[in-house]
Amino acid sequence: MSKDNSDQTDPSKPGLARGAGIALAMVAALAGLAASYGLSLALRMEESKVSHQQPTPEAWFETPTPTSPALVAQGRALFLNSCAHCHGADAMGDEGPDLHRVEVSDRYISNIITHGIKGEMPSFSKKLGRDEIVRLTAYVRSLD
Image (cartoon, rainbow, N blue to C red):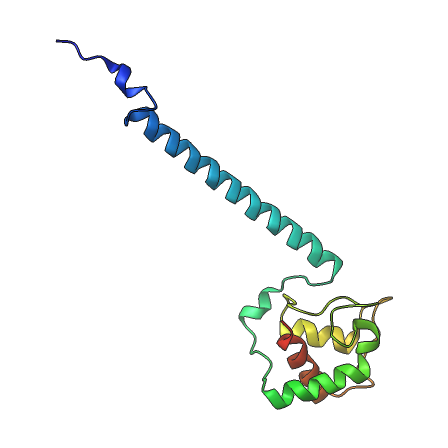
């Protein structure tokens, strides 16, 4: 008695064709997810170039800036006096970039505050001391 294989290709019946369709749908979903993830990485890298947020490997090796509610509050007061005219009182950006969720190290933030960015942001090394820069860094890091 020969067995007819036509049952296995009929999509209305469970079998190989139905399993292949599910597998194909899963592969397509994974490909779409991978493409979305790749695009998001590319867009984040491009945006970081514009906003000077270059990811820095030293973040793994540095001690984070000390933080406390009092230090963040002092940093906010300094921010409002020294930075808000360019970055906005809410730090969402105006003339300067948005400072929420910056993806750079604390050292990088401190360096930018201290030395500025030529043609874009002034240096604050003569206006602010090391402790004040630590407070500002803590405040910027606290922004979500």
